[in-house]
Length: 324
Ligand code: SF4
Image (cartoon, rainbow, N blue to C red; front, side, top):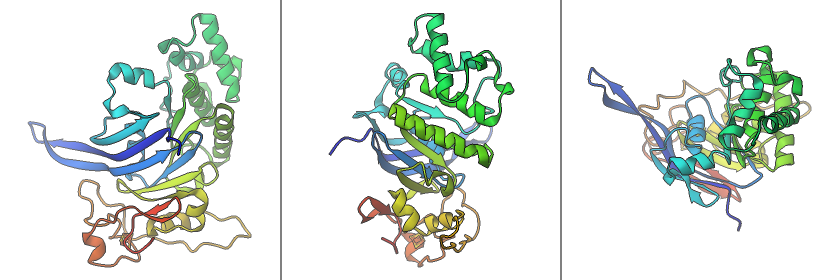
């Protein structure tokens, strides 16, 4: 069996909450709770969940933009949690991120040429000014922009074009893995498809691997090979896209999926409306975190025992006492 490009083992991230005049730690937010998954080279794994599910925190821990509390993150056979600052600097070439908000993620005082060319200078990938410019033009053309855009500023572009600039910036260092952190959530629906198509084309052309974070299942259906669903910091289901969309097992996945529009003439899905809001991650429910909202919960089992991820079928894993 070939080694996955990325292996996440029991990843945990807690954020300390400080209070009082002395700023002592008074509580903890359990943002990511023992998350594990593999990602093979050339694959796209969707990481899906509502706001507060821990999906973006997971993505940022993988890139070590924030430090994990516990767990292992293996990239090409090395546990990157153990790397020092120098080793991490070199690794930044291999792992890049595309941010959700194309309006906030580009420095408004820098030209597009400077934004895209910055990483080339940091990593010493182009030796002369001319070489940097040539590479920037090449990158802009790769994402559907032109050489004439190089001397302009981010505010002169639409949301979709700014996201293309963000993609060009990520591509500049020829990464292997890109964490796409809700890259189309802030865009109009008509533009979303264009950006997703571009990401698919780039994946084919450059052999990229994506961790694609999204808050609903409709966005990831076509781009992802596999999908992992998170709820309140835990992974509740992971399966191939085809299995997850046709045979969801976890009641939370079923509810998310029921909100995805189905094109005619496929059968209509019955919308499942969940009770209440996502609980507070400072004090998550005992047992199965989902039990307070679950339409099929069985008490006291579901409120007292944590369901473990178990194999339901080939490549299909679910964390539920009653399913799988
Ligand atoms: Fe629902 Fe219980 Fe399954 Fe949790 S473990 S999803 S509460 S049935």
